[in-house]
Length: 187
Image (cartoon, rainbow, N blue to C red; front, top):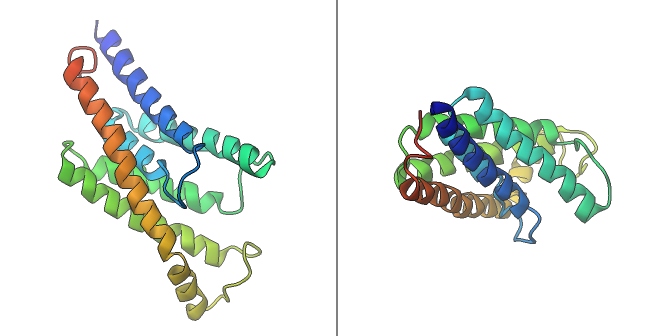
């Protein structure tokens, strides 16, 4: 009987994360995307460590391929910044699992702020560090500072997107748990 509980909960969590990945296909403001929310949500709810990482990372990877093909008309498995983006994403999974022991508005909010800041710092460092991406930032302290300053408008999109989509993902699952408490009970 426990296996059915696990399957219903696991399946529901997977559907929510994969649906969030589909939301990336909808035109939205810059960096207003469910990426951080998927990582935080996965870190907070999946029971096993491998699930926390694998399901959100798979959703990100699949949606990356579709986005690249649909919007840029090219099939790309990994772009130049993939190591930085996926590394920051994995850290955001850890943030979700570390900061959200009990799902509360305050813990989800705090995890989103920390995750947004980490994603901003890591990915923009990658923009600066990886050769041949933009070639507009010199590889010195001034170039790095300029890169971070230029990325500030995108940072606000990241925070807003993370907060909006986290409210949506966490809200849907919390509602579902209240509506179907036996089926979605954590084991």
